[in-house]
Length: 268
Length: 252
Image (cartoon, rainbow over all chains, first blue to last red; front, side):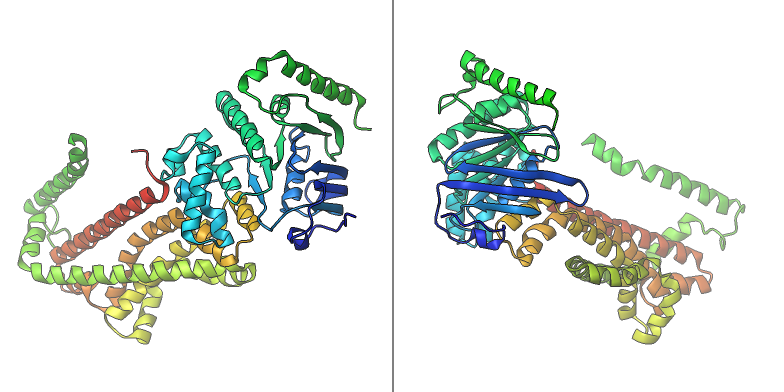
């Protein structure tokens, strides 16, 4: 029996892991400034799934992600996130948001520092996290000395350093050039294949959603509801070459058709 | 190399030209020496009273430096206090602006009554004039923290102290340095004005020489005050640049 409760600090306490990682039940979110953002949201996400939230700019995708992270609280409704500890989720922002005065290893180690781990443990795990995102050689450089792609990799390492079971990403590759974006998408998919943690990835790019996700939730315009819930039938391991494969294009077509038909339906 | 040399030497050309013109004006009796002393007199005064100038300059610079250091420490602490609560900020910030608007000349006599003649009052005068830019810039820096990083700290349950020392303060370092640079010139001004009333240092020399109509000494002291101010600013720029370079790394 799953018990629902309003999100508060209690949900981050240890609890029995149910079948679903994320559970939203009739969740509403209003802001004083922008009005209704999310309306009557219901969905669940399985543990270990790769879920993409797809929607136009301003569709409330980021708000939904922030609700999952616990950075916002719902105005109404229940949501439950199954976490092993208070620090069991990683968050990647739209921009790398590294601290310019810290070198990479100090940036990546920050979460462990805030949790209060001993210094030698922090450096060891930060090095390992940098290694995971292929940044092992540059751990003593400052962010200003790195390219945009490397900064985003470091930001990803920071989100992974505390070994969370839930990884949340808010349009992380939007500001990167296409080739870097393709490479990072491929690497992120690979990471997921190895770690099998739950990933929620927000994007407005249909291509990116299709390439990365096992499942895509398409959000409507504000106030957002989930319009479509699509399963992507692509292989587990995905290389950049897949983007030109007819199989990939078929999946893309499926999504575009759904978006097109819902667009003509209006928001009734 | 050639470029940096010309950068240092070029400003001396106008100075040389002005000196030559001033020398001519005095020599041919166009302007009386008690209005504009000939540069050669000023130069001679440097030579004759060099020990007096040396000790006065040392006194003024020490007072300005001490005032600046005190203003730097107190200013940063006050800004931290303001940043901890809106209530404190709203009720106290208007009084902080007092330090910016107060005409130091008008309260210097008061300072003498409270703190006596001499070095201590000069330091306090320098401190009063130079503290506001530190408060204002540090406070602005503490407030301009990256909201995403604040979210990140929140995600990992950071304490307020952690947020202050690991995020807000280090992020404010460039603004704190900007504040200190603005304050450096002001600290020198505050010290010289303090010395006008409280005595001692270059301000004391200027005030005494003025009453004795020794304009050569007035000019010599004014030049020394300006040059030592420039030197202080130059040193602070060096320190600030090296800190900033360390702060954000460099491409070299």
